[in-house]
Length: 345
Figure 1 (cartoon, one colour):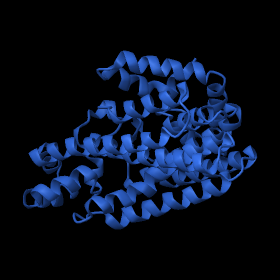
Figure 2 (figure 1 turned 30 degrees about the vertical axis):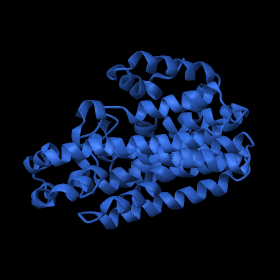
Figure 3 (figure 1 turned 120 degrees about the vertical axis):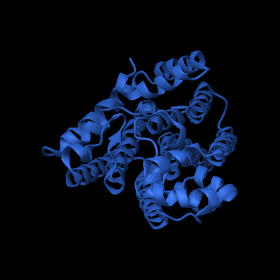
Figure 4 (figure 1 turned 90 degrees about the vertical axis):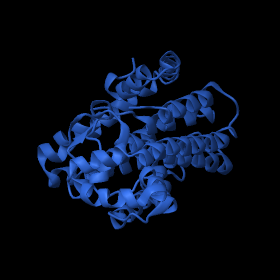
């Protein structure tokens, strides 16, 4: 069976979307295709989360074993099958991708002073910032060990390069805090490093595990990058218009942290005279001002425009995915990413 923790969020999304029946169907198909690989994936993640001295293991388990969407490892495994490879060879790489992602979440919550993650108190709230940072570091070393042990050509260099891009994106975001002149291109530069690079790495890892050609590795990497951009845009939209208990974190957190996301960048282009004063007070902790920002007509319109932007990125990525031979796996990948981009929670 699909581990409940791993896919609970995706199943909830499917249930709240108008195409719930179709979502349930493709998730069942993914389960059937990957029924041998998924338990092995979860076993590797559990082992990595339980590794290390107390309380580092507790902080890691708090996050990793809470499940989450597991989108990146799913993409790795499906790409391997779509490229005609042995999915068992991709499992360590899929686990490594998820561990890198989990480590970045632990670090991000410290940087952003996050209070919730996946509907639970963030690890830093329960064990403190130092423990969270060290737990993230330990997960990164586990990820590198898995990649090294997999023995897949090019995977280690790709992973290290991706980590550098992740760090670079985080630095750009820190420098951009509180800036209202970031613009769309400035925002996309951050997202390409901070989010899209790991999606791209996840897909390339799957192709590498299958022994795919350089052209195929590049194509699925571009697919992953486009999907990663779209995924982050939807997350940013949900920070403004989502339902807190469904999104799994307090709304307006990005706003309070001074981040200019795509919806805000678009809204500022339309109505900066009204929004700029509100943003200053919202970023100073004024919750009423934050609510007025999210409810502003220009922001509401910008959220819809951002969703359209995300859809265009997704379709661009799917054009790259279409370079793979037609298969059930390729179609399921397409359905999976469309479901994530259409989500409302």
